Image (cartoon, rainbow, N blue to C red; front, side, top):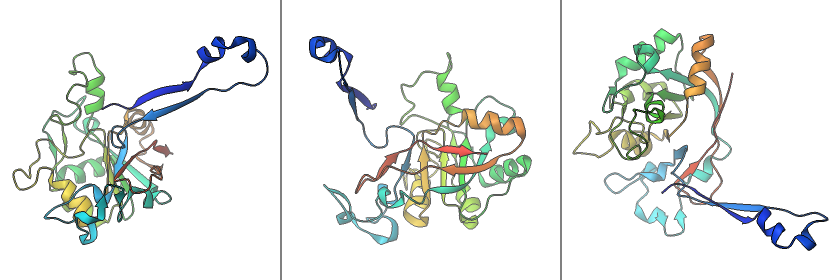
Length: 249
């Protein structure tokens, strides 16, 4: 479901009691109700299990009805900041966006990085632009109906062969699931890169990132690296968290 913003106290409340509210200090208050992965977000390492275990071999008992005992996203609250690199595949290929199910492989990542004059290294956060979000915003893009869980372009399985030896810290994209959907790993694993990154390698996955403004800026000056700050909320035991990432060039 989408996040729901509600007002606890608003101007109408003041008007209803205007005799008392017309002077002195008054206030407004609001709240939000949302699944923690319904917007721009990080997946925590405890988000995915494979063969009964999650990162570092923790079993299902490690995520209880009270939340995650191990690998909670809240443990990363002061750690998700560092060098960011954008890979802009639509501009590299000379198209507006990649098509659903297009899979970005290791050779594609290498070629795009070389074209942009950027090297991916240890501790980097790699942002992948597919143009999928831009397409959905357009009049003929099909709207947002199946943006979540529908077919999408993204990383192919061999992307791990390029990124993991370089010891990246996280990978994020403008799609809902980072990897190409349907996944190349079917039927063995529904989303193979989630297993490889989260369960096996301890690499953060970011989804639903709006990188359009950043991509335009990078294309304008030819600089595709920046300082990225993308700390999750400190929700104890959470297996994912919304974020408001900031790229500083």
